[in-house]
Image (cartoon, rainbow, N blue to C red):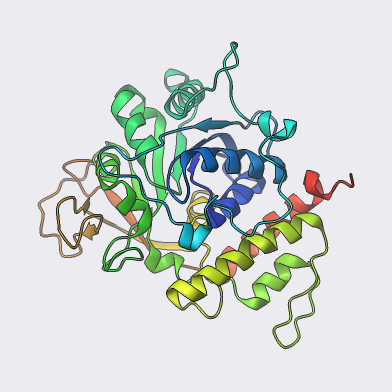
Length: 358
């Protein structure tokens, strides 16, 4: 199994927490660092939530948080408290306080103690991995608005050859979730998304058409709470460890908001974790390459991902501004994805500091 070097950009967010857990525990992923961005909550909250999750999910000690953009490139900032709560991880129990020493130790700092910010950390990690072509390319994974990624593309064009692919959870094919046609991550900063689509790098889109099929049912939730569950009449198994209880609280809150807001009765979709799963196991996905652009000006359609299914636009074979610039996931093997997720939970359970008795 080929080892993948990954930089992860997140806005935790309940499904971002699941993506972070998987990124920390998948055996063929080496996480170089994590940048945080505005999105599901304010940039202040998402940075703290990222550090809290890295500690809880037993990330290697050298995997640090690099706080990033606090607003979109051009538009007013949007958050989603209806889905994720005011702090981005509403209802989640068991995570350490953001002020605790172990969480504060997760922030990347300069010698003078000041924070190292997202695009600086991203550029340094990718440059060090690439080593002027003698090293390895890095997959950059985004599970929130792509502001940080767009800034990286714009400020460090000479590092595009060091990027294997941009993989992002976002967008939809003819469907939205925060407008009739726009998905939240893209709608938050559509100009940033277009900059990434125009970069000369392979881009992979995991749209809500696919993520809405990856539902955490009661049976899956019960297995997450206990490795040997007994599900009777939809009564969930008792959480067997603190780590599993924390992950269960992530799912439970998300399930409640998805039921009340979108009418998902069977459970919540685990959007962002699918982007990490794609990097680790792309064979689980069916995908097709298209020209994709973002609607930037439509009164009713701003933020829509426009997929040129019928090849109306003349494109060459390059990635970026003139080519078929995006691989769009069409489906995922849902059962195999959840087995991958649950295996990560088991590995995390064996080493999480949440399970250490105080």
